[in-house]
Amino acid sequence: MCGIVGLYSKSPAVQEHLGAHLASMLVQMADRGPDSAGLAVYGEPVDGSKLSLRLAAGADWHSIEGQMREALGIVSAVFATPEQVVVTVDAAPAEARSYMTERFGGLVTLVSVGRAIELYKEAVHPSDFIASFGVEKMSGSHGLGHTRMATESKITTDGSHPFSTGDDLCLVHNGSLSNHNQLRRMLRKEGIHFQTENDSEVAAGYLTWRMREGATLEQALEGCLEDLDGFFTFAVGTFDGFAVLRDPIACKPAVMAETDDWVAMASEYRALAVLPGAADARVWEPEPGRVYSWSAVTA
Image: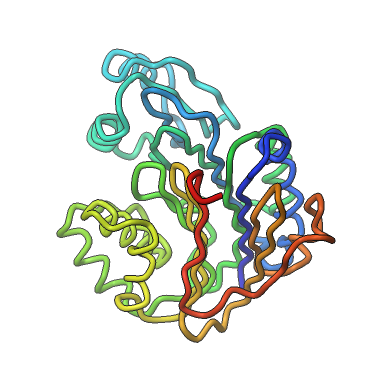
């Protein structure tokens, strides 16, 4: 089941109210995924990096903050909830990722790293997620959201979408992959780290690996058609881009719409109908096996 939403802004007005629009879209997808919800928002880029962190129960934030300040140069720390915090640091994303992964182990989950991405997720009903995280107040250039019905694994925050495995890259997925264990073993040998057994995280890791090897986002997604077995609808975010791909059979629903102010996709049209100007938008069903992408260059 699960519900996917994605919104790419082409106007300042939509950017300013991006979180409110995504919240409205997520509410419409709650019936498709009442078990958990998540949101990745691409906000104002920083010179260093942003770290989306989730603290384990009993973790001493003051101690963690002190060590991070000395090693990475903390600029700010904003708590979305008592457990989830977005920290801006002077260090570059690669340095920050390496330090956090090696230093804090089970005390801190590194949810995302990048110059623009902020990623939040929780194993609660989408309506509760929106209220707890203040989604309506967020702004940014684009964002992805997901509501999950956990049919194949436990209902946990770690197992919730979106998944981020590379700098400023995240993925949401509706479907199921049959060869994810084989791919996970291969990608681990290539230095890709995984935090869960979720097949969607493997898909994100695959894109990270392909792009690290020099592929564009579009080329990496085209590789999915050859290397990923199963069925899927993917929505993917990068630093300045947004893309959608369905597998060649396309048994999972998806619909897209575009106006002069935005491009959006969702699992059902009702999540697009709440956007301003939706009545006059160009609406279509994405073709199977075709990559659709937008960026600051092409928008």
